[in-house]
Figure: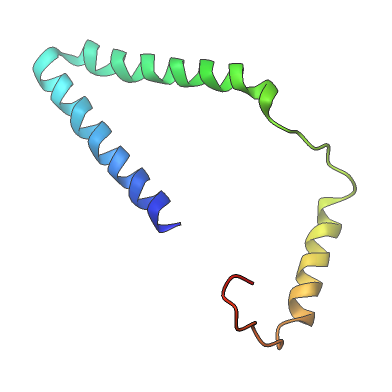
Length: 87
């Protein structure tokens, strides 16, 4: 999780720095156009890749599943954690 947030923060920082540099040196049109084109490319990649995703149709009520998770957590709240951190 830490690497994910670090990577996202670094990507945001670099993207905003590059966009501001482009806006200051090349103009607002380029500063808006380049991120817009990048977003369009990402949407196209998402749409073209969506048939590869495995979709599972929901079964039953989500409230029942939520209640089951809460009941299991309450029931197991006093259990000892395993010694092996992988478990």
